[in-house]
Length: 153
Image (cartoon, rainbow, N blue to C red; front, side, top):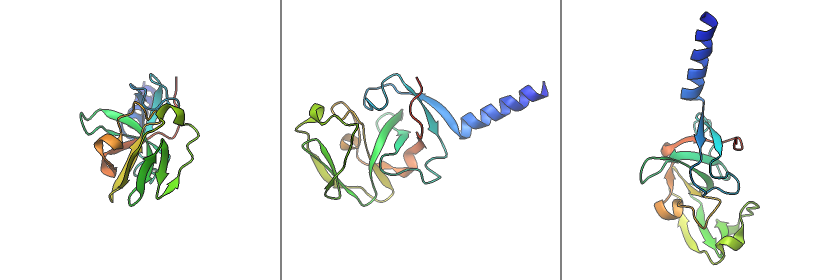
């Protein structure tokens, strides 16, 4: 019985402070993370410096506080724009092999500069994603976890 108690304690500690599953409720990250997929949130990720361009992050949505998964495309001090569907950071186009530009053709945004202590996040499915284009840059303090691993089905 003592071993079972230790196992339970280890599982509880891991879930509270290290990893936790999250089911993706929207299609805003498709095709990289399909709707209905589960991902593992790595809670120490933000504190360990794991937040940079291309990182998948989980944060409290500014409108309702729900946990939201998006991709970081720019960090503090960088200028972000979208020109005819192409992501442009600091004046240079960014290669995004997972983004279907034909689905978001004629999309324009910005440029805006990311404030200190913030990141700019976008959904991979830009045509339907509600992201930093709508609610602005995300404070680093709002990021709850990173997602270092692909989804689990």
